[in-house]
Length: 381
Ligand SMILES: Cc1cc2nc3c(=O)[nH]c(=O)nc-3n(C[C@H](O)[C@H](O)[C@H](O)COP(=O)(O)OP(=O)(O)OC[C@H]3O[C@@H](n4cnc5c(N)ncnc54)[C@H](O)[C@@H]3O)c2cc1C
Image (cartoon, rainbow, N blue to C red):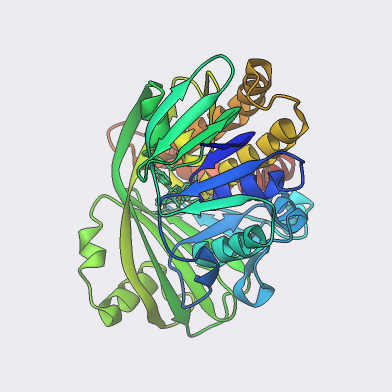
């Protein structure tokens, strides 16, 4: 049996950043990741999975010295959103009072940056194994792994993603609302410079985002009810389809990574803490990607947990876990409701006047500077 203060299950962006954030806390920390292979070797090729990282979360990753090299990172200075009947809103970094609205970074390169640092840290890294049993008492939690190893700790953090095994094993029920849509992601080289502008179109039955990457490249998330129409296309036809959907604003496209589809769901667990167990990242919440905020919520979970667990004498103490749950509840609920509300507003076809309302709302907000500034600040988290 190995004994730790904190065991983090799941070495994705949220679990890895949390483990690294705890590395210098004086606590004995283990990070258990089910996949094999060296995550630090992931710095290769273009990754279609990219994230719009908010300024607050960039500061968190900077504080861990785990921000990827800037030649792989795109900057969003301006965000331009268009409705399905001419509505438009545009805000920029000045509206938000920030250096940038967000930065666009690839999943693999961010993971590699975190795992490089983890390999040099005091964190015990256990890869290629998953837990098969979890038992908790008032004093500790015990995980049995598929290779027979046993890990005992004051607290187990579930950062094992949307289908969290720990969440299920703990008996925490989660409400799951499938959107019926998938997010199709792909990367393209474009003919004309993107000007650090993120472009988004609400088409009525789908939402398309063009996100500026480093150089003359963009990454897209196209949330659609018919993902197979995109994933079945060859590279050339996909490039033409995506360029035309955005009115060829950036000229012709060349496909860098083919379309990959991810089913979209809203997941809301009834609680995010249980005896000696705490949920973080997608294990604790998912949101529709139309606001690009999923991983941002997860990084904020990690930053708060690193602070609370790192400072507590007993990191699994019920009061510590409850404090985390209370402090995160409002931000998570607001983001889930906002994204869900926008999804309904821009996909509702049955209510007469709804298309008018949403487009007029966008254009009106665009003209009301204080309201626009308010939304810009909310958007950057
Ligand atoms: C199409 C799409 C586009 C998105 N775009 C954005 C965006 O632009 N911006 C944004 O902020 N968010 C976006 N998101 C959301 C984002 O992908 C997630 O919020 C983020 O990946 C969650 O990170 P995580 O570390 O919590 O979980 P995950 O990334 O799922 O990581 C979980 C880790 O746990 C490991 N694991 C799982 N089970 C076990 C187990 N039993 N034992 C051990 N290890 C285990 C897995 O191998 C994995 O490494 C998007 C999502 C989708 C679907």
